[in-house]
Amino acid sequence: MNEFVQQVLNGLAIGSVYALVAVGYTLVFGVLRFINFAHGSVLTFAAYVSLFSVLVFKVPFPFAFGASLVLSGLFSIMIERQAYRPLRARGAPNLNLLITSIGVSLLVENAIIVFYSADFFVFPRVLPSGTVSLLGLATAPPIDLLLTAVAVFLMSALYMFVNFSKMGVAIQALAHDRDAAALMGININLTIAYTFFIAGVMASSAGVLIGIKFNVNPYLGGLFGVKSFAAAVVGGIGSIPGSYFGGYLIGLLETMGAGYVSSNYKDAIAFVLLVLILLFKPSGLLGRGIQEKV
Amino acid sequence: MLKVEGLNVFYGGIHALADVCVEVEEGEIVTIIGANGAGKSTLLRTISGLVRSRSGSIKFRDRDITAAPSHEIVAMGIAHAPEGRRIFGNLTVRHNLRLGAFLRTRASEIERDMERVFRLFPRLKERQGQLAGTLSGGEQQMLCMGRALMAAPKLLLLDEPSMGLAPVLVQEIYREIRRIREDVTILLVEQNAYQALRVADRGYVLETGRIVMQGPCAQLRDDPVVKKAYRGG
Ligand SMILES: Nc1ncnc2c1ncn2[C@@H]1O[C@H](COP(=O)(O)OP(=O)(O)OP(=O)(O)O)[C@@H](O)[C@H]1O
Ligand SMILES: [Mg+2]
Image (cartoon, rainbow over all chains, first blue to last red):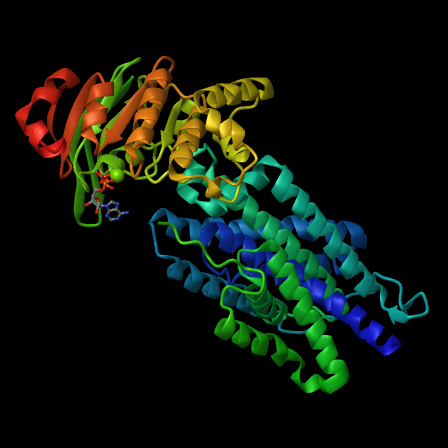
């Protein structure tokens, strides 16, 4: 029993990562109808920003964390401004955006390798070492608890923002019908920029924390990004609750699979699930399918 | 109030609007009639900034809005009830109306205009908590017009408000258009020339992207060509 509780706990921590990143794919897909494969780069960027802040500039971790969220959100906006908006302005098909986003992610990954280093960096100790015991049922390293707490906090904040702020309503309207939203007086480009900022902040919180949990390297966003993309599709792309559901489902299946079957297949689980969903329920577990305009 | 001059719009190789000139004076209802694919919606979408023109100019109250983004055009006082209604089906009737007032900030004024829309369309009031996607076609048209009015516009662009509606509902919609005109200038696009020419003051006939005829509606109503082509004889 305790063994099971322990696995669930591990699964929730890693599932939090996938959920935080997956929601960004879904948000951007909602407003621009393409999969932003550069989303993982924002995560990598955040991990390096916080690493530098702590290591080089000796910034206390909480401030470094906050700064990387904001800077990564701005980095996400910058990718949209520089890479996607010019294409959008010319009315390029969404496929061009998708291909460009793959290019951006390769660019970021390789820029880090060329201008800095391909090395893997261990994050300086910023959290207490050891493990925390939870009611004697299970133990967890502090980073896992922080991950889950940050995820729950940001997911709640996003819920409030989307449903109760003016910009949140604008994002929903834009996701439903861009032209109709524009006719309501909604500033489309500004709303898209906000969406990229939020997607960037959610992903970068995960980026910083997995940098601490594992290490910081140029490929961080690649692996976690693509697994989170699988989570977003499994949950139903375009659905915010779906992306959380997909994230935690993959997180839990991965740890269960590693714990009870074999850890060799851990990284394959997300993709097997992705293929199964695409075969049997392409709209995702909680998705309603993409509404095509008449 | 609105002055469209020499407007040319292309979709790839398709010349959708060719040297179109249209004027609307304050307080008028002006109608644009024309068959399927004549370019009527394209004209309204270009005025609203959803489609860009290749040449020509659009002026609204002496300001050039040809290159302005849609949200600024709304802010200047042009609301657009688009073809196909384009309501937010996943939101309630009330939320749709509130989105119509997106750029406005005074809660009391928004509430007052909401009541005004409900007086105009009492059926919307009964259904204010209902998801807009579950409304009937006629109710969706009312919501579409009500939502545009929530912007408190000076000029209202109406794109085929009678499309797909039963004759009784068409009559009802046109009755409301007559009431709306008391406060708002209207540019009305229709295939249903019979109704449009009865409600409007002046009209333009659009044919494959060109204005081929214009004049007071009383005159257009009696024109044999218009009668034959657009009113089914
Ligand atoms: N997005 C688009 N891309 C390419 N061609 C378009 C597009 N929108 C409209 N067209 C073409 O432009 C022409 C004018 O279309 P428009 O929708 O303005 O006509 P309309 O007068 O509103 O017709 P209807 O009465 O059927 O609504 C048509 O030939 C149409 O096929
Ligand atoms: Mg039309």
